[in-house]
Image (cartoon, rainbow, N blue to C red; front, side, top):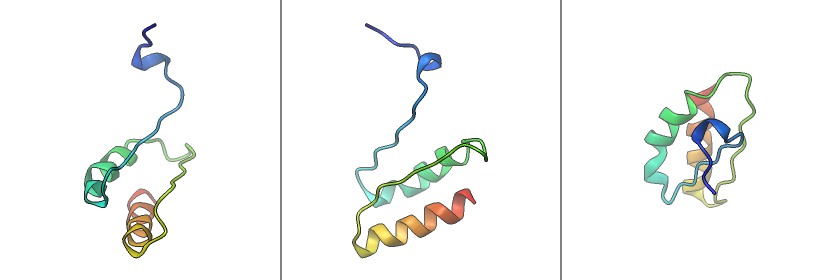
Length: 59
């Protein structure tokens, strides 16, 4: 079965590395302001710093 991009209702971004933060920031900035965003990040220091950067970039 094939599903077109227009039929997909949910979105997910999987980051393999914190170094991808710039690309993820660009993607998140295209999401409408009122749309809910949720993140699951590692709880180590780099993950915590990344969470702050991403939150600031989409606010």
